[in-house]
Length: 269
Ligand SMILES: NC(=O)c1ccc[n+]([C@@H]2O[C@H](COP(=O)([O-])OP(=O)(O)OC[C@H]3O[C@@H](n4cnc5c(N)ncnc54)[C@H](O)[C@@H]3O)[C@@H](O)[C@H]2O)c1
Image 1 (cartoon, rainbow, N blue to C red):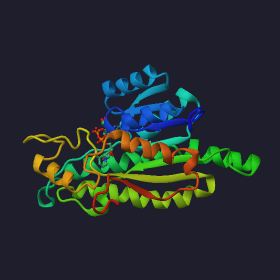
Image 2 (spheres, helix red, strand yellow; image 1 turned 45 degrees about the vertical axis):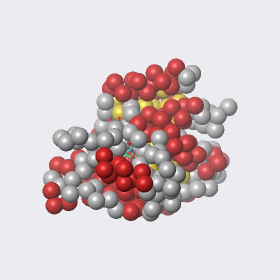
Image 3 (cartoon, rainbow, N blue to C red; image 1 turned 90 degrees about the vertical axis):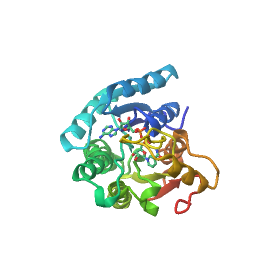
Image 4 (cartoon, protein in one colour; image 1 turned 180 degrees about the horizontal axis):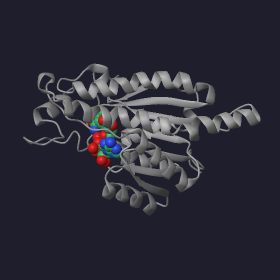
């Protein structure tokens, strides 16, 4: 039996990178996993990985950065496995530019992908998290088990990162939202925490060529590596492991915190 046997988890942006590793890890711990992504093929690939390892997964293709899509995502998620216990708000992206050159589109897209998805997905989960706990409290005096929400912030929001004003605004808001929701949801046994990844090797941090929307220039990558105490970039599994801990019963008395997962980066240790 894994730590999450009998639980149902939803991971947004689970088609690639950190989200894929997290979905696979939660399935390995015994959870049935809803694999959300806005892109169909990557979501199908994650479901195939989980099923090949003997786990249970179901894809839901949606971009939950607006309320109606988040509600459709949630309805499809609950229809698949009949309940929901864990929400990992992982979807996010970057559109880096110096502040004086940042377009309104760069701002809107990054706020929607990082903050909008988490805000609306968590809202849409309320009937399955808060209302379910409330009914259990009415029946027995306490929720049957802790339910969990994890936000994917970034160490960028803790230290401030040049060229990422839109991204740090969104991720900083997620950290503030984590604290507020931890207070609101605490009476219902719903824990809300955040992970703040440092430099994790995915397409967001791959070496960037001129004209690429995603990625980081090679000299910035070398500088980032030099600042990491453990001397290596992080892997998606490094974040997945910390999220797996936060959503497990071992972390039932942890709420409202943001855990930097950076390998020991200044500002993230
Ligand atoms: N890679 C890093 O170093 C790093 C550092 C700090 C924080 N993060 C955060 O971790 C999360 C995952 O990043 P990653 O590096 O794995 O990126 P990634 O691009 O490899 O994967 C992100 C996935 O999210 C999906 N997605 C993006 N916007 C979406 C939306 N609106 N609706 C549904 N799906 C959406 C993408 O299709 C993609 O499959 C993001 O929130 C990112 O900001 C990453």
